[in-house]
Length: 299
Image 1 (tube, one colour):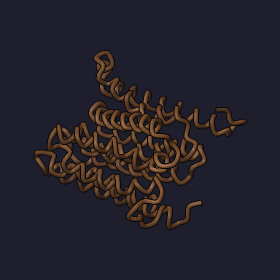
Image 2: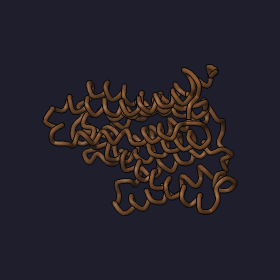
Image 3: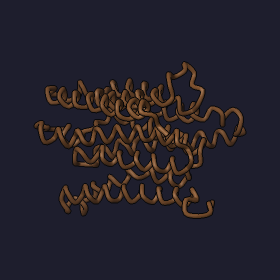
Image 4: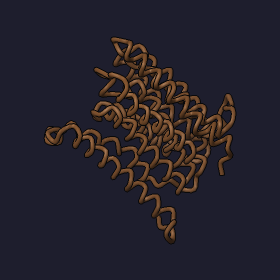
């Protein structure tokens, strides 16, 4: 049971800080004609919000993390830093993606590499997870541009993070579920503010169609991957549920199909969101069945 302090510092304060920084970024982006100088603030809003929530739940981070979930603080700091130079060069982006895709599984699963897996098994897992992280990162990037409506991007990731929260909680890992809950609260704050600000502020150009710029993709990728890997390897989150959550943003790409585009923007967005929601719902149903909530647990 969360205490009042944990509720405030772990959930409400991160949302307030995230919302304040996001609102500031909207204001500055509308004053910046190039719309690039302050894009890193959106990544900072999401990242700093999560770090505050993480510290509230886990306490001050150790220099060398004792548990896998503790790495997320350092990954988030690196993701914010990466967001500051994300648009500088295509080759730098590619190299950055490859380095992090290789490093993240190794750091998160250090105990498996040391004590559980043999050399061959470790290499196979490492390659598979590296490919998975890299693929998901690019799915995130594609979904940012494929969803046409400004508020739809944070809404979609609110749904995915909310589904992750429920699935991890059903799998018996409340601590990891709380970390997913922080992510959900942050996206909820951004989504609500986006709706409000779009009515009050004249948003034009790129920022209107892409409320969350590509420079935010490292933060989104690191947080979701960190929670999913912890949920699968250190808890009992079903592998199928993890795969469905990972692949759910792919359905944003249906908006690029000509036949779908002819439906109009409103119906296209609705179709994209419904397909993503269906994928997350199936992942949740599988987790419910595997949890044994309505009967004997079947694997």
